[in-house]
Image 1: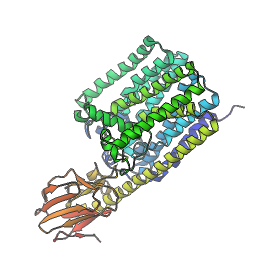
Image 2: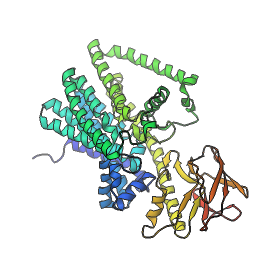
Image 3: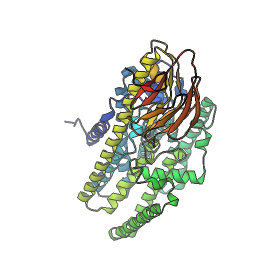
Length: 538
């Protein structure tokens, strides 16, 4: 009797289950920031955002149409959108396992060690502490989808390499085209194919022919995208995408390398990384890593002969090259060492980082039991880091739900002037975008009054306090000096006299019609009385 299951199906189920457990704290979390803009339009039947004509000029139709499918099933219930993200992440981790297995097969490893290395790579990717933004933030789905189809394209290409069946090649090219429709970061796929083909066959002509076919798909996509957007660059604009300053690229590369293996770092302990080349501690750590690397090389010479080491070097160089290639589309974009903000840009590059770590660990730790123990310890650390970051995202989502409901109730009766609005909570976007849309969601059946925002604020905690001083000219001061005001703008009802990091100086103007003036502090909006003192609404 044919078996109704297979080891692959069991592993897939385990990866999906582990993803659900790891990110379960946010399954019921509310929407955040860009979610309101993108999903709000979809819920109202406006699909123009799929073609990149609004919201920054991103041409990502597959990403937006995934929202259309979710909206048909879940409506405005955030649970379903989070569930989709988690399932996509679990699928990606399973594909990383399969990619590791396929890439390691030519190295003629022991079957047990090959399985351990491949499963370790998938598990490390699943619980990687730099994946919270891509998985927990519904708007991070573009990276999940692009990575899914890039991995499928590469795996299908490897199937073509093994069988020479043309339909595998056609499928690989088609999957690459689909990946491009999810997010532009997939443009690195032709170079990924080139590096893998060179490693597996060492035939430059054959590798270049494969590269040329994928490059042709990419050229067609770039042409279509430029035609639709009316711009060759689009996205965040030329200031970011075309910033090739050596210092900028150096710092971005350092951040990417650190965050490809570590969670957000404690600011106080790692503040020297702001200016690493001016810090003796940085050079000390760099020297320690070089000593450890030299020790690993000496240890490896004891275990492997020259031919084995040469093959290992080629494989390691390929993985390093794949990491750099996957990083190319986002190397100009800012990510942060101390916050979860921007880590979604590392989602695809960390595929290569996890493969590299699992392989090197397998080479240096010869005893399989010890290897499993070391991997288990690292996965435990990753799990703890993911859980901590999950709590920050959950706090931000709770804040988003509370404040949008409060503003919706008030905007239904009077115009609102908001002296400050939470932009993000420790890097998690709250109302960086989408405030108006978030408020309108609560009363879609009626027209709400105007909302004027004077300043957005970076918060370290949802309970952080802001105080207001003065009678005529007012000073809004953040009690936590790490909080800062940003995007400060004078409004018809408020004139901005000046702003610093944690201080905002304003003067109220007469408003017609009369508006309510609110100050955000300690997790809620507080109504200012005629003497400009905060009163908590009843």
